[in-house]
Length: 261
Image (cartoon, rainbow, N blue to C red; front, side, top):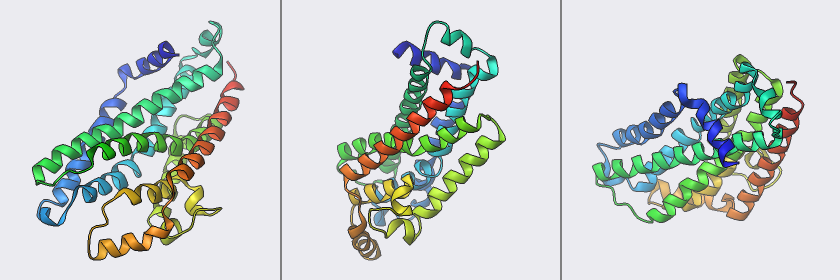
């Protein structure tokens, strides 16, 4: 399996996706730092981290992962090499798991690069950094959770079996719906249950991670206390995302297995 994952990474040799993803992960902490440059005394690390997660992870990591998935799932089809892999023999299920493994590594690497960049920017602003071990763990968890969030969209892309326009449209629609819902009361101020704030992964993840931020003071503390009844416990959040990921991976394997070679 490790050799298969390495082979999947080799596909990016002539593609700039890794470089672009790394640049995006670095740039957003820099942008947030620039926004807070004139008010450093009113900013703590959680303010900076929250902005990075909101824009750099929730808004951009999902499209990046789906673009990467498009490259992974359609390269053999475009180059007509899937038949060679199957005759090794190698099951299509293992091929799918290897591709998702690559996406997981990239997703976690993206969040960790953003984390390192945010630490550098915090030092520049003179922001005190506390509970950094917790922040490090949160970034790893975010990478894996956002992979789970991207998998339903990946399943749709594989099902439509198109690597260009349809994939872009699906990705943009999925990302926008998730992002818009997570900044509304429908997504934020809703109990855990059969509702859009729980079913859509980004609002769910947002209500989970928000409980780890500093309460702050003034309006920030008031908003935090308003949110408190709607925080999602870690076991419930992980359980829901594992269910979403499991269903999505099963669907991807079934769809990919039926692909003609």
